[in-house]
Image (cartoon, rainbow, N blue to C red; front, side, top):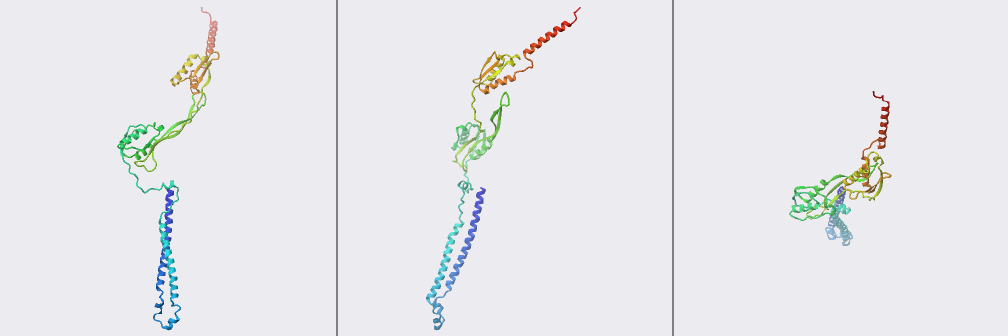
Length: 344
């Protein structure tokens, strides 16, 4: 809009300059015209010039007062008069052109941005009480509030799941309602953009903040017959990377030495999958000779096993160490009894 205004001011200044120049030329042309007319009127005819002169004087001045010389002088003045009239006509014919607005030469997109002098369309007002719902529900409520007058709206299937809040309006039109709806829908949400792991256990997620909003828009100045379209700006989620099932091995020897059994450990793992409502939990098998627990399933589901094993209570002494400690206590007790004096 600033570019258009500056260009219009420049065109207006150029028009003023050309108009001043044209007025100056017209004034000069008119002055020459009246001078020529006066000069022609002042040239006397041979008959008028010879009046009052004697026969001798008329004979001496006869060449100058001849009809041919008089006509030649008068013809020369007529030529000057014709040139002056042509110049006046040319300037007068061009002067309206200078006063007309010139073509701006701007692109059509910029030409359309010029402020229009046409008055804005008057939109009908209505009262609205909307309990909340989808965009389609809001359009139906607006049509009912306007006396079931149809509203031109385009709503995509993928966007009709957006739930709009309850609205209560009095004396508003469609443009005012839609203009207030979009700023109200503006929200900032956290979106998971990736995951990373910094050791055994549950992985951590990486987040980023993004803005979401929705609303109704139309092209040009809103009118009663405008076509509105419902748009939604959603966050962009990273693509899902398909993962296949894998087989993992877990050593249960340290946990069995602490007094736990295989059933205790596998029951805790399966309970976790049941609470997570896994439709197809991984398969578990225990190899007795190596004390290895084998699991086959999705990598994310197998992380439950890591969590269970890390959460089990730990002890510095194993069962073998406790048995050896008990045996040492018994031996020390026997030595103490042997050193004790006999009772009287």
